[in-house]
Length: 90
Image 1 (cartoon, one colour):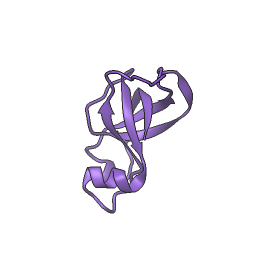
Image 2: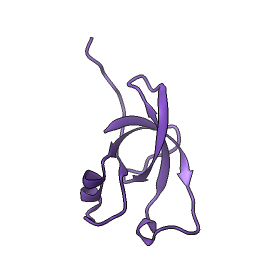
Image 3: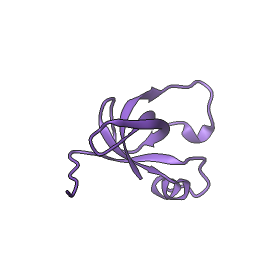
């Protein structure tokens, strides 16, 4: 899992049928302060996240498929939460 910030939504006219009905979002990887760390993923949105929101992303195929309830789905990353606050130990 990692923290990220939603940057935008993906729209496609041709895609794998599995993604019909799923929102795909571009998520930048961030540190605990919301600063970009480099890289991004395209993730299925399961929580209704929007642009600019900090999110928690599960970036592991088997876990993502379990959340979506499809053991054969062609998916790796799924947004599992919208982050309200991050507190780190000093």
